Image 1 (cartoon, rainbow over the protein chains, first blue to last red):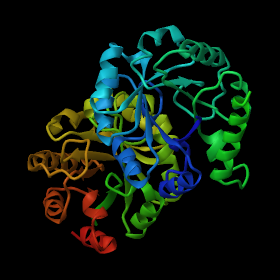
Image 2: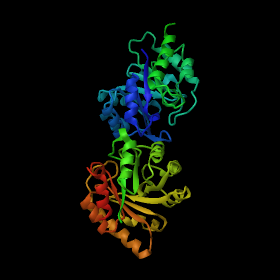
Image 3: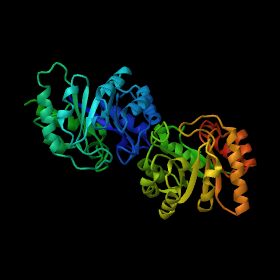
Length: 226
Length: 215
């Protein structure tokens, strides 16, 4: 099963309710919401009150990515919204088990996020404890960056590691995901594709979100047949 | 005339474009934007990209209140996003003089913010250099809180020092402002009222603005 997650930060912030209506119509599977604290990344976005308003306005499940230092503090700030997933950066966790337990204590699915240059070996001890692994394919912070090709090998390695395991966290990729970069991931695919400006919210043509999402879905699934 | 700055903290984020139009049509003087990072205050709101989008939608001057740590690192981002006034917390700056200078170098008016429990004396030496002093009348972080009356002491002092020295900064208050607390503030020398939920929840927003303008 392949899931499409829309990165709402890339949508029109002045017309979020319209964006949500269009994403629902497009059968978007998840809303990917980036929380940035201005310190872990040099950008600031998406507060708890904003995300709570989104949650109230839509039926699409919410996937929060904490691009912050001090994950525990931010989990406490965002968990009351009851998203489906919360991802935290393993690079910022002093005690990974404790952070995972904290997310679980709210009944939320825990997910580990890792930057392009962070090796897979760091997350392997925790694969049984998380429901998702968020592999950043760009450095978090700003949209419009280039896909880091070294992550392809990491996806391959993680897929291999998960092969034959009873508990398999989903693999999510985020950063410059579009038709071209999706092709690069053909022979070892992730499960969740985060779509931002380049794949979904751009204004290059008049295609609907529905068309854009279903075209990408088809492209991905055509490779799963082989 | 008392000036009105509307905070969007309790606005409808899902229809922000329409909210901004309604705020502008109501006749307010500034759009007050609360930038929070989750570190300096226990809440997080939005950053420069959202500010830039809002600036495209409205003609109102942007009065930006930075509730963030190390504001000097991002002053340029907010200036580029269209800020008219940028206010920084006395409590967040190691070198306030330098930050004030930086704001002005980016072509914006500089403001200093003090929390309810910070004595006005702490910022006395900077008053000649700023266009605005924002006295927090609640603890910063969340909308809908109750006005803290002890802050009137600071307001009185600020107004007195301004008169004695011929300074021209405006005094702004933020937190728990309604008609009653607004009147108290104005009596004591306040020029700009930040209104959040009181404005957003009003049945007739233009009428409310007219009333506050004439206080």
